[in-house]
Length: 286
Image 1 (cartoon, helix red, strand yellow):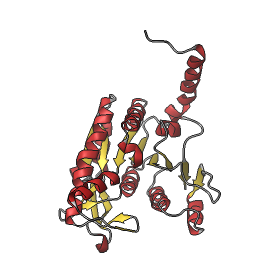
Image 2: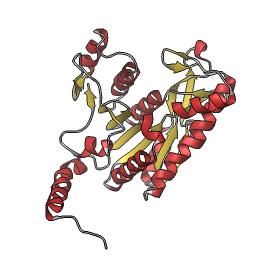
Image 3: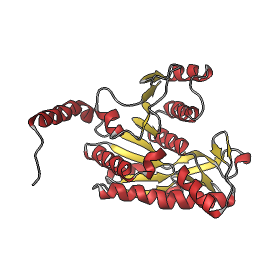
Image 4: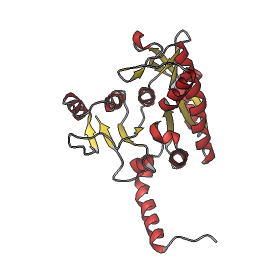
């Protein structure tokens, strides 16, 4: 026999729902690009929780666009195939054998897992890569990196058409070149380019840390672009956080209203950020 929650639980739930109403109205019709990656991708419970968040976002009027990575899965298959993979400045050196594996993992295994998770929660998701409908046309980033691309053209009309049909795009960061090349694109870079092209209201970069931290290790909940540049120059923002903050700054320059770097391992991180007054992680604005 199923037990109903105690009265105090009802009250807490009602208060939570009531307090979310202004934020739900605020984001009605807004485009939110979510970069999904990190350890949460390999955990079924975390994947299901993320999928429920995305479906709920759409149900209350948000137009979510999901962009994902998949580095650990790529590394695993490269190891099994005996293909060596090197990194330069945090980017994978991608030769022809490597780019074939990258496309196989990202556009296949990882992409379809996320699509199925969203659909299992009642959503209508479709899996894409930057090759589909010339969604993400790229140029070579650096000859020393091989088939690593930088997005230069985006087919935003295609994405807007999907939003009109209430379909959630799940995008693997694989781009196409002008001459038919296949390019591996950093997941954060792809998410920033897509968010910028859509002039998204929010870009949420889910990662494995709580956010951007100051010199004492405290999470900075709100920052300006100038503050990000200053902290980077001072060495406070360093290591793996630099590519994320660089993506944030580029997205803001392209017209994204705000970028949030937050912990994707935290339950309901996206909902907390969008629909509560305290948010989650570090918000960066112009």
